[in-house]
Image 1 (spheres, rainbow, N blue to C red):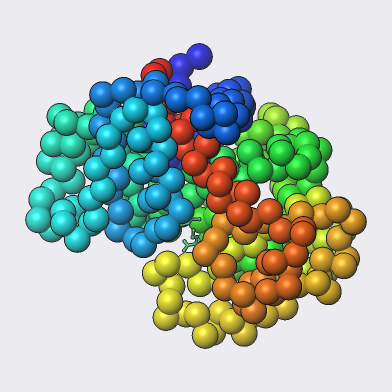
Image 2: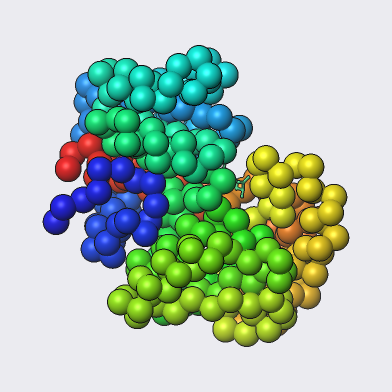
Length: 308
Ligand code: CP
Ligand code: NVA
C-alpha cells in the first residue's frame, strides 16, 4: 500500500493504513508495559517545531522518539520565525538535510502544509488551528480499549474546532458513528464536513450535526469535549463562556446518555467551563488514559512514516 509522505490530515489516510497504525500502537503499548525496548528508529533525528504551548504533545513526542532509539530536537518558533528570519522554502530544505522527520505545531494550517511541500522528509501535524490528527489517533486507541470503534457512537460537544475536525476525518476514514453538537454559529468547517461525509459514505460511517445538547446524548457511548476558546482565541473567551454554557458536560447532561457512557477530553481542561469538576474526576472519565495513549499512537505514526 502506498502511504502519504506526511501525517497532516487523517482525510489523506486510508482506513487500512490507520487500522495498521492503531494495531501497532496497541502492540507498542504492550511492549512498553513489559519494558521491552523498541529501538526501531535508531540513529534517526526528529525535529519538533512548536509555535504554540504544549504539555502532552511535546512531552510524548520527546519520550516517544527516545523510546524508538532516535533523537528529538525541540525548536520553539521564537528561535526560527519561519517567514521572518528565513523563508519557509529554506527552512524546509535545511531541516531536510539533517532530520528524518519534522513534527510541527503551528497556528496557521497552511504553514504546516507549506513546510511539508518544501521538505523531502515526512511532516507530522502536531496541531494547527484547523486539525489535530495525532490527538484523534490516541482517541481512537482509547475508544478501542473501551468499546467497538465502528459500533459505539461518539458525541463531541462544544466548539467545532481543530479537535472536532480531526474526529470528523477519523470517523469518516474508519467508518465510525459520530455526532458533533455545537452552538449554531460554531459548527465545524463545511469543507471538513464534506470530506468526512464523503469518506463515511465509503466506509459505512455516519456523521451527524446537532445543536441540542440533551438530544445529542441519546445514543452516546462516548462523550467528548474540548476547551471553548482554543489557543489563539483567548480574546473571545469571555463571550464564548456565555454562548457555550448550555454545552457543559456535567452530571445532568450525562444522565441523559445510556449507562456506561465514557467521557473524553483532549486536555488541557477548564473545570467549571466545558466540563464540570465532578464529571472530570468521575469513574466515567478516561481522559488520562487518552493522554497516555498519545505516546503510543505517536510512536506508531513515527514508525509508519519513517520505516515506509
Ligand atoms: N491535547 C494536547 O494536544 O495537549 P497539549 O496542547 O498540552 O499538547
Ligand atoms: N482546541 C484546543 C486543543 C488543545 C489541545 C486548542 O487548539 O487550543
